[in-house]
Length: 440
Image 1 (spheres, helix red, strand yellow):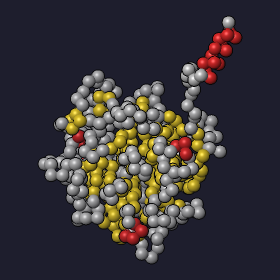
Image 2 (spheres, helix red, strand yellow):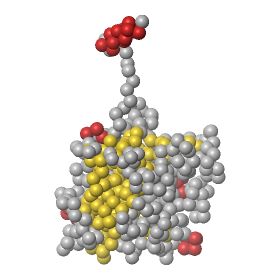
Image 3 (cartoon, one colour):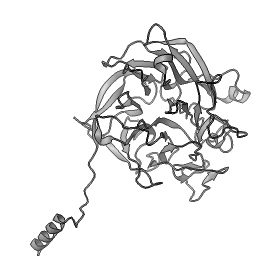
Image 4 (cartoon, one colour):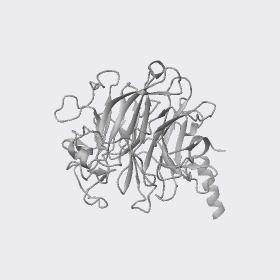
């Protein structure tokens, strides 16, 4: 009987009439150390000027240059440690957080940074008394005499944003394919977007506030900038015209798909139960603090998600994330505790990753460096969630990186990097940047 069954099954397989489920192949990569001796590397940028230099942002207020030959120059490209607020060694979300080079940097030498400065004297009395700091979006120029040195006195402050608390700053600065500058801002801090100096419905939903938003600016016109004429809220009363999209808690790293297919992707760190990644569209509202991921959210009961809630706020319909995963803060099936946005892979070294969004999570545990790499591929059906799987690190016992993941980077060849630390706060000089390479 069993022999007959084997013969029948073999015949059906040969005819292609039986489908046999096989587990998907596990994605494994190796990490190549390219820079160490750093202090909390939180951002990575290239000038696209043909030099192949890689610029690494240290949260403490320095930008370092990694040369094409692998040398990390000892002298910072920019050092603004004396311009930022004093940072807390144990844990801090302030500092130098973003860097972007002008698309015509090769000719004009202009670049842009986002950093946490002391509270400005011109802030409102409430912010001077109760607020934490003032964030600066500033333009600098490279030195005329040394391409590896910025001109420190060239600073031109484009925008100042008063921040209620120390956390949820966002801080990503990038240029889009349209030539405009995009800036991601968190909700101002504390928790649940509900605290001193937060409006009743939270900064994320307050369209008169820049906090909890992604902004879009024309830095080639105006004084100090102009509003792109097709920004979604131009001419609308009571709304800041800089706003491109709203409803964010703490967008920690965003990027444009360099292949031009998937647009702007932002990872938004959520509260206690979920983490999310969004495809950001002009005028979109991503729900915070009325939703956490795809789930209803009550800021007064952050761990109890109501079954029903409105799908819009003031007529703006909420857009759900394309990636969502449970958080280990409150769920045993969690996949991490703080999402870190990455890039759609468009390089050549890792063909299996082509078109996949590569991102990560800070750690499985706050007190132990245990970050995870993930990849996601767009759904084939409109409106469906993207897939998500762990990327294993070759040579690691559990396949994870064994460090906290702070951010990712993309070089001029569209190859990817992961920025790591061994500390919860911006201290020491033991942190590293790795290039993601084929498994060895």
